[in-house]
Image (cartoon, rainbow, N blue to C red):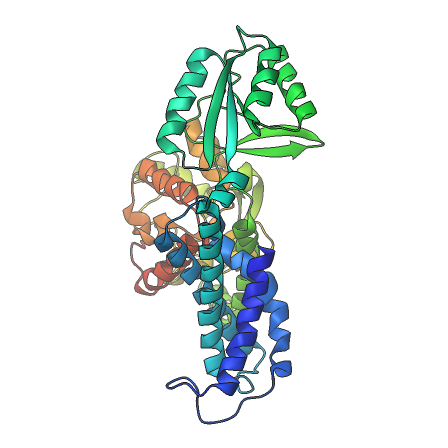
Length: 452
């Protein structure tokens, strides 16, 4: 990551040099450009951002010996985002007139070429006899005969030249000295422990032996068969732990989502301040009662919070709800009625275009909600979930918009389908998915699609 960050910086420097000294067609322009010193401040942004952009593009999640196509595509996405990021920074700081546009394009191209060249050199080195000798893992498989035989068969189907199984040890039948002997005979530099059918005392002995020998130990931790959880290793006050998680993992992407929520809500609240004041005046003039409707909703992990909306119903709407229960058109615990008589005239207009949801930007700004996420349900409706699996939709922050919102909103009458869309979002979450949902929300709101 450090090397890639530096190569991005070198790419910017070379891009400036190419533009200044070589007059290439199409992108060079007619005028001389300023010295690199006026561009150097961009390095403070480019260098730290480079590894993050590569990480978000999946560049560091490739196999040890990736294909050129896979490397090229992921690197291309990172370089495009780097160019877009530089353009946004220049626009925000109003310095685009000082820096030649061709330098930004050359920067993306040079960064792409430099890192692709670095990757190709590393790949050639790994494939060379010297590289294979230094990077190859000579593995001992330790477990019962059945477990080690099964794992060796799996490794034979998947491994390249970087892994080599040199021997197996049936720790339930052979003494620990046999493991030591085989490590010395084969110069093993890795041991895979399969602990399912071995006593913990024997496993502890094997780990202690490998510690003394300076040999890496990989403990296969598939003790429990999970259906949805992703497993990762963490540390809890110095103790190694396995973490089983069904929600989006804590990552740079998740942190960026929180930053984007805060910044996005702040900008929208600033831009919509005057329209929201006018809407508040219209609500007060159109019907008696408060401007805002406040209700306890279930947030992250079910934590209650007070959700804000512009009031679109008469003031005693909650008290009249029990009279309309028989007209409920939604399955499950959710309450929805077409042409609800409690809605005011102006409230119907607000609901059609989701104007009543605008105060929830305050909830987003306070960190209680997100711009994108499952819609928050009232606390009493969450308590009436008949399937405990439905609570998994509470494993992420609720949002202003979601897959249900862009799938027709009230046209989705089956609560099971609503939950399915929410869980699909959780299981496939990414920043790109959030971006696509936000883009699709805009036409859904302006056309009033699915609103009742």
